[in-house]
Length: 196
Ligand code: G4P
Image 1: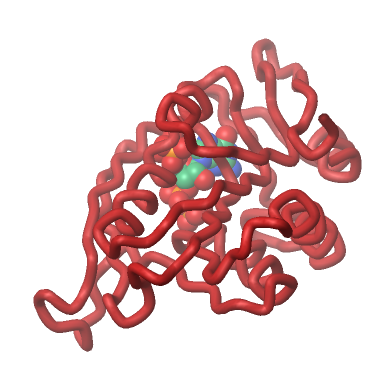
Image 2: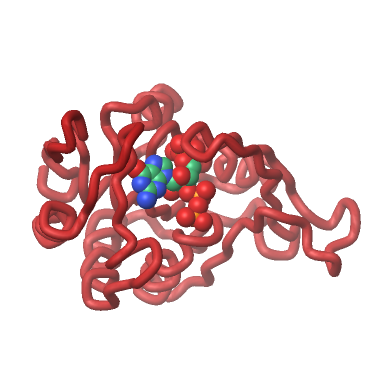
């Protein structure tokens, strides 16, 4: 998506260890017009798929996911990174996600009330790096017996393993911005999936 690429070029900042900071429009302050345009791109890409639910993970996936859910006119559910005190044992699906970027491991949970074998699910998330968050979400869908239809990503770090891992599992990925490299603080792009 050209607008996203332009904003990454103008306002994104490269940090050590190949981290791209996009706090001014995605991860902290949020640009609603950009979010809406990105949601429209995902809708156009996946609209034939008979989606019944949008799934994401807290925190930064929630903003794009809710807008995509609105376009599909389906509920959005987000996996939580801690078990709410109101959820009793056996009332939720649980998986483990290790973040290489942040060097933390989270148990992620979704209540069994909100994911079922009837669900045809589109996953939405902000970053795809090593793919662990998406694989954790896919595991929750598998436990529920639901169907994973595809994955929509705002910014993919194509030089990390996530994309390859998902494609090896035949998971369809639509990334609106694909970073080929962040070497020497220079941002280089691959062609985004919605532009192919
Ligand atoms: P993975 O999910 O693809 O395996 O990625 P990884 O574990 O490496 O990254 C985990 C967290 O770090 C995710 O946020 C992801 O969005 C974020 N992340 C990864 N690379 C970058 C980057 O270059 N820039 C930014 N801004 N974030 C990056 P999270 O733990 O889910 O946190 P939240 O922000 O959603 O709360």
